[in-house]
Length: 482
Image 1 (cartoon, one colour):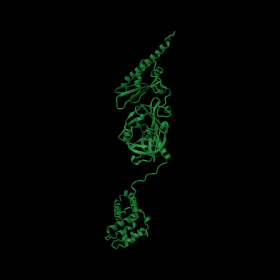
Image 2: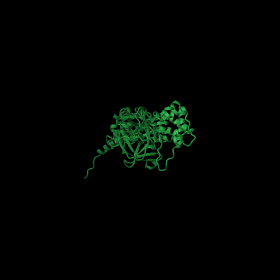
Image 3: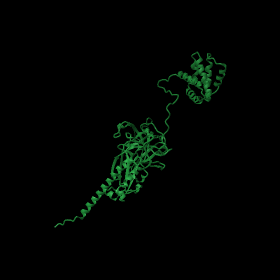
Image 4: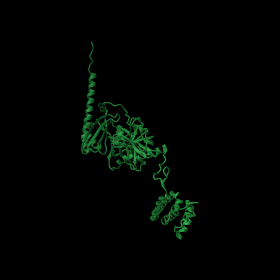
């Protein structure tokens, strides 16, 4: 006997329930239909009849009236939800009040579960976790959002690492130690697009994370995973550029979520994600993703081996990207990825270092590398006024690849300190460095020019003195032994 027939049979035994003639025929029609095939509207009518019976029946046999449908309470509630979604836009609020009363009354009639038995909830309020992606699917999803970070000056990069695109309008997160005190930063996307003008939006020295902006749009980003959803033992992946091998993938497990206070040398006051996916030099700033290809954190370092690696939760540093303005770095147009070292993130030099005086003796061309905070033109103008440049002993060139020496200009953030470095690019030897305190780069240029030329003359004189000493030594007659 289906539930509709059971319901009408039970209702006939309740002589105290007054069926109106018009509703009795409707109720009898419902009883002849299989309940499983009832449409939502017919279910609604059946529920209304039940509510009327519960409200008007004066005897204690109401339980027998509704008992046939209690076993299908889940179906009633599911239809109730479906009807709400269908009828709410039409403003049928009164109907749902009736259904709500029926559901509440029926729930009261259901006996409590017997201790030790299983009672299934009508709805699963916690969504089921989606199945894990394959490792290939994770890598294909994450890799386009990872970038190569190249930092340095001139044509020789001094730091190579990774970054992660966190917003489609060109916001990139990376490890702060990669770009710290670097005059220029270059960002390269997986599709080959390279950006030489980078703006530092914000830095978090405690967590070793920096936010950069490049002039790009519609970039591919990743969904973000909450730290609360990550659990020890879960599979994680890293996509980074270890040892200069771009977009390398590795996998491991999430070991723990712990406070930085527990990690030697990591500082204090923030969370770290500990994982076992192997990383090495060049992985800093890379992406740590879960098995759904969602971004968990920014890789910041390792401790005592490849299985003790750490990342900062991305949700802890996203606020760095909210700034509108920032510090514009110099042009990295001349940084050459091909000149990086084969086994580390530090560039390989093309010749062994010599003494500063010897380098200065052979130097003839100089290139000045500036940035928007300290442009090169004012300094070049001041250098052209010196006797060395007027007499042709030294020449100014625009291409850093053709220069024997580079003058790197920068300004320390939030200060009036304008700095310079005199470097031989082929060996990396720093011939001189200094700073000037001024209102802007134009006023700092004469002070910096004087420091540079004083250093150049000192090295030239030192080379001449050394050369003269060698000549005197060679021309001195040897004593004869009798």
